[in-house]
Amino acid sequence: MTATTLTDAPTEPGLDPDAGKLGMWVFLASELLFFGGLFAAYLYGRSHLPAGWAEGSRHTDVLLGTVNTAVLLTSSAAVALAVACEEEPRRRRWTARLLALTAALGVAFLVLKGLEWHAEWREHLVPGPAFALHVAGAQQFFALYFVMTGLHGVHMVGGIAALALLARGRSHRRAWASARHVEAAALYWHFVDVVWIFLYPLLYLVSRHG
Amino acid sequence: MADERLDEAGFARAARAGFARERRTIGFAWIALLVLMLASLGSAYLKLGPWNMAAGLVIAGIKAAIVAWLFMRLRDAGTLIRLAAVAGLGAWCLLVALGGIDYATRTQTPSPVQRPQQLLPAQAASEPG
Image 1 (cartoon, rainbow over the protein chains, first blue to last red):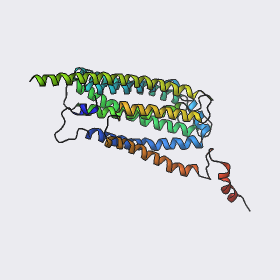
Image 2 (tube, one colour):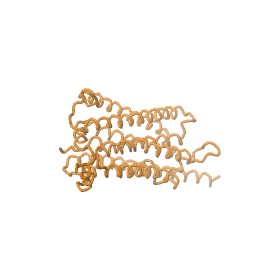
Image 3 (cartoon, each protein chain N blue to C red):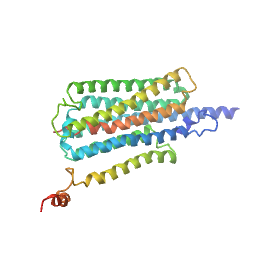
Image 4 (cartoon, each protein chain N blue to C red):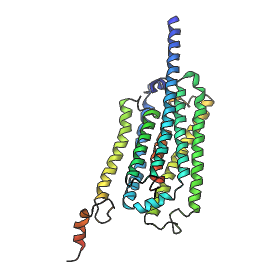
């Protein structure tokens, strides 16, 4: 079963069934450049301030970071399954449940991230006069850490809202919760997952053996 | 009429087979992603020098490719959609490459990866006499 079958579902007259997907991919390309500037800043800091980057990364919570990575990868699989269910008439009732599961996993991710931020606040790892680490570059590392994970969190909130809305719309058989919209929301969610896939080794796994 | 019923039955069978295949693919991809995540975590605790970062990024690249190819269905997408996906990545590579040319060749705030002989002309110029 290919994606073409999904888009064979009734759409607005005169609208190319692939238009929604293409629009979302173009949007995601612009989002990649949005995050891309931060990744470029990270590479600069990593190459110019390696000691500070290593010290900063060793103070992140690798256990919570790993658990959150597993949660996000699982949520991506769940939303991919929701799109697959949409294409098989006998499985369509599962679409709403899987969308709701994906949104719930997203909420779990944000709760764990919130706990992590809270612990970092208490350990004086937020850049400022009381910053706990005294290695050059460690403060810049944590500044970038909070900007990158914060921006990622904002994108998560948008994705969770879209998925929860679609799950509710599907369960109430609303016309606007169409297959095209489910697929577009799933693409967005996968992108948020891909951003985290790169954040995980860059923020949590620098010089762990040291 | 009978032909139409046969077509409907055939379509339903194809949809069921397609779903079973897709479910299997998603399951395998999910397991592969979790195994790669653990490999990435494990490699960070090995003393590999600069290869630690390389290992982390290569594994992240493989994971991202699995998500893009199988979950985001680039394998089934048309040329236009694949082009849109690659365009963003290409533009980012240009951004990093052009920015990197500047930062990797600076003599005033050098990076540890820059060779000493690269910085000699600037040091000679700053010395009096």
